[in-house]
Length: 429
Length: 121
Image (cartoon, rainbow over all chains, first blue to last red; front, side, top):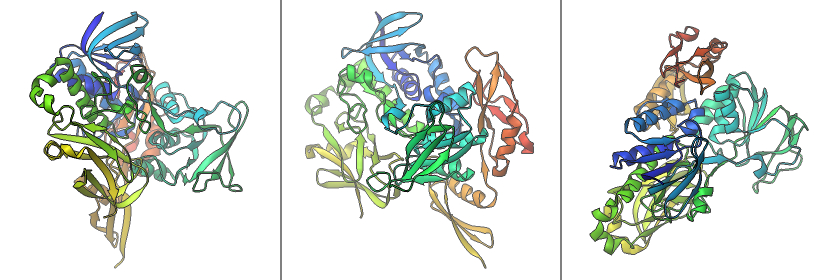
């Protein structure tokens, strides 16, 4: 059986950054297994600009951002298996994959990094009545068709859901000559980034209908029209508010789901909120030696943050594989390893990543990422360790579509490890 | 004197800072709400001469892997020239090999800005 120190599942932005970090942390043999015939993952179809401002201090398109990571990984001698689909990861860190050239093959890993990303919530998950005509696409599928295959999915478009890909596609379709009638959003706020509402909808006069949803799809062979209604506070359509939009295409941008079939099979504990693995301060899952990062862990809105998170996962996986983790902090660990603080999502916060922190094992600083559960103005983000508030920071605007973060210091947590838990919550003052 | 306040969302990066630009007789007096100097520059420019980077993709011949190559304007161009740039890209076909940064259309739509490739093919 092949053997590698770190095996990374997925060659998108998370997988590439994790691979680079694993090599830079001293692992000689690092393998990335990717099911597509190219690296870069979803970045290949994200041809718009806005990537890399944090990482490279310049504004890149998706393919350019991916190319930088791909080049760096190649330089460092990371190995790749493309066109290879992982079918199984076991809790003793054996990865099985299948590819046309190799057939089914197994790889023994010293550590595994899960970087499989996410997929789009499909029409079937929405329960919109009507036939199943052609012309209904998830926004990401449409994005691939237009940007990579050179095919236009339709000419008269309605978009349901205001996730970032839907907003980006509203602009893209308009630039390619289609007419986008509107973007309907079930919630009273957009799930996408503010900047995308400005530069993808406002710039082109495309209306964003908040608290609206599609109630009916007309057409047997091809979409002929969709009906859009206002919804009440319980998100139920309000009778009498339906408006018919004649169109040939309905695009769905209604959420992303981390792709965790492999994780589940491996026995990795998943969070019901993020639908990604529950991880500790080193982004290690409940299965020792299996780490997770990027959209498979929780859905991100910025690739720069994916890269940062994956860098940490790659480093921690390398340390695990090389046995440095126990060597470095053996003395501490004996006494402290079991002493972890549980991280809890308090008032206004949906979830946090990670879920536990063992201060003795964490770096000097640790970034905790979280999302809020509604749109808030002028709130304080507060961090409590036990009953003691150790951080209190004012934010003008917080929204579910924008991931937030706090940076915790090791020293602050070490001296309070007896408190048992950390709570991140929003406060009015 | 006509004093005017305009609220904008900065689009320079995904942080999307809420800006308030104060104008007097059409002249920018101040920008607040930004968290970096790019935000200040954006606020001033957006109320006087707004610009955007345009991205698209064009077909490529002779590549085993790619049918399309993604492209962008090398820098931002005036907002009212966006559709002129798109028209200029109609009918453009590339031949592999293509490198990132290769000029696809020089001085597109008279903007003085080149359209360049953003993908290898």
